[in-house]
Image (cartoon, rainbow, N blue to C red; front, side, top):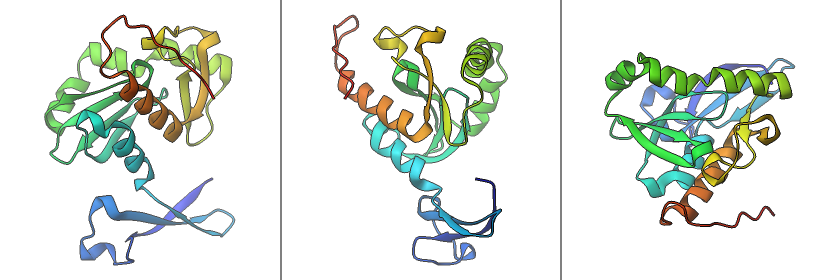
Length: 185
């Protein structure tokens, strides 16, 4: 839904100028048809905290998102983490925003982050995902899923982050090569 931002407010309706914390923000929007919509900026951060907190990530803000739902997330200490749903992983990749800037200028990182060939394949097969959705692997690569057309789909970004985090936590302590049974309910 297209909308324009009216003002930022905290949960207890304090004005933005009073210095509310980023983690308590909400946004008031007016949609193009004139209806007031209250959207919470923090829903995705809360999903990240809940799904990936076991890794040590305490998210403060989302720095970037790619078409496959990979996220670069700044934590409360300023470190930058990458959530890589198709690999069921979440790791610190930079110690600061400046460090991330250097990393983002490297060809290896850019190729891995932009996923141009995979995005092209997914877009030609599935079209452009609707707002709030991203491409995904139906079966994560780390569980044997392929980076081929038959394993591509779209999903709500929040659902991908939550599901990938849940699966990652379940297999976190398993040794490499361990057999797992994936049950979809």
